[in-house]
Picture (tube, rainbow over the protein chains, first blue to last red):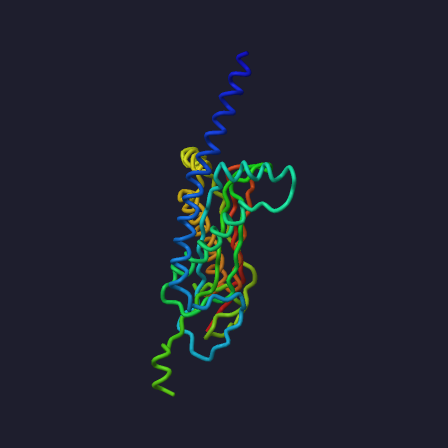
Length: 162
Length: 104
């Protein structure tokens, strides 16, 4: 009797958590996505490439390593829907936007950490799980790193000298 | 000390190679942070405490790598790579490695 009562409490608690995760998590996710989209617009013309070679004749004033990282937690609703998904297999749609947000946020932080850079070379992204267990997904860390290049002559000066 | 993750330092020439240098740091989260993270795991969102913790850890790994390079007499490190692995529940290792060089 006592046992079934505690199971009942546990079940209703999990239900509340899942509901909370659905309501709050969804709102937070869409807010973060809007924020990322807005910030990405500002850097639309800034080249961030994954190649290593600099195809530019302009003299380089500064080249240095920059990185950006973020840890994003999964919500209870996503954990629940993914556990259902695991029964039948297939794509876990809930996790895709989570990882996408983490990576884009990391890239944005990398760009924002070097406001005077003209170009980012050799961008690398890594993702790692930092909590949770083998069965359950926890939070993920995304790190982006690249070499920030600053040219010594600004385009305006180039036009005058040539 | 100049760091890049490409094979050269643009605008400079590498005159000497000193080989591999590396630095690492393993950090654990403390209980208070873990508790806050547990709550965040219900509603999602960024875990600022963890972000900072991993950044500090990575900064320390970079410092250790730089120290190694300075001891060798290098003034730059090229082709830097980061690696993260969780070594135990609640602890993760940050590792950073690269090639120490002398540039002119």
